[in-house]
Length: 220
Length: 367
Image (cartoon, rainbow over all chains, first blue to last red; front, side, top):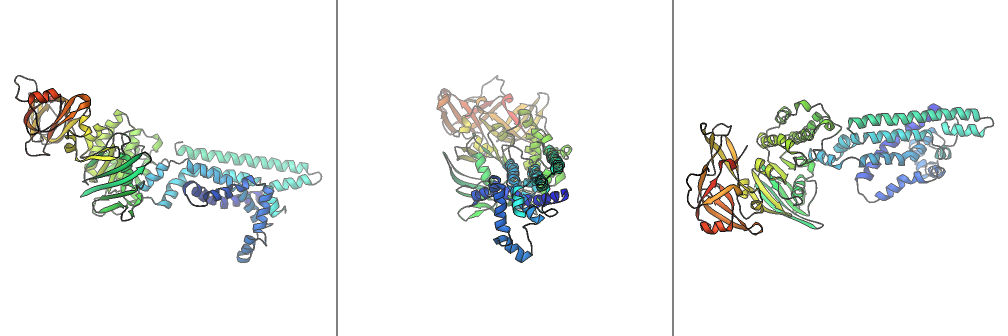
């Protein structure tokens, strides 16, 4: 179950973070119609009750939902009641915070450096890869690790969207919840909580240390 | 072969309407007070912002022509830009910074390639190659930035007050590199500055900018000797003469420099005969006379013709341009700041012959 939790979180971050970087970049650097709308949409899971987010996911990605039906017909992919679905729920829930972390890092970059790169012959994609990404790396890394740690604890959206199926969708917090619901489960809940705490602490340490190293390399 | 810039733009509370054309060789200084629009002109040449209307060309390359709908993005102009704040990439080493532009440089065509080792040697940055930008001093950073721009194999170099953030000692450290650079790289340089001493030392051409307009553009000495420009009203106004070491008189510890069609004695200069030098002769150090005085310490008494007399009412003085060789404008001229009374007593009018007395110790020998 710990392995399942780590797998669900890792998948959520691996898929969510690149998308978060692109979204943050678009929000920070591009001016396009619908930018405010995108910004609102991205932040929605942060302010909605998680159970509502989970239910909306169920509506969208359920087997009869518009996206779920397509995925099922074309790719034979089912998200409801699967660990992949748990990853999706986690990714959606942590997305706003990852975007915020990356966006902050992007906005802290001196735009003069990108202008300098332009003068040296670097086109848009070239600049993004060789200047923007490396300079934002500490922020991206921190956002990723923070997202990962938060995924480990996602509850409301996950249980609503994929239910609490041991071995399939029962991540750590869901297992703790199940233990507390069962008579005499306090001991199990306590030991699982300890595991949860340990993972969170390791995650926070990991988030801090490489970011500090990267920042030192950049002379910050 | 010409660098030609014409641009118009309306900022809130400030309008820019500038046009000039200068030969596309050597260093062209854009000089003027802060806020005159010099950096905006340079930025438009670099393509970093887009004026309402502009046409910017260098030789046969059109950077921008709003009438024809041409606007090259900066990454395709091949303009090596050096910013006031060096803007080195903090995540790359000095060598990585230097190679950033080099790797993206297109084939050179007719221009000789600028080689990595040459630039490193010219700027004296060999020992810095493995360092990170944040460990460099301000002067070192600026040298690396100049090297990075050079190595991008630019069509021309655009420098925006590259020395403005540095103290006097660091300026002195970098100035010789900059002077060597124009000749070594064989690329024209547009150089923005509000420091007249940098202009006097570095520039071959001068574009005088004030309040968004170009007041004058041309060879440095030709612009500097005009009595009607605000440049001549400055306290440190001076004429510039290009010259060569003619002879040394070692027993008397003097050197004669042939410049602007005349000879000037200066305290012994440590340079071989024939060496090209530039003389800076401050306007307030020049005495005008009708006849040659006798028994006087002044070494230099040169004959000339009054070309221009312009009053400076604010200071109750007059600025006089004295052409050194009559009938040959552009050959060489001195500026003299005198009183209106002196002009009246000597009967100075345009075309009148006059003698200019210049103390040998008042002449500044540059380069």
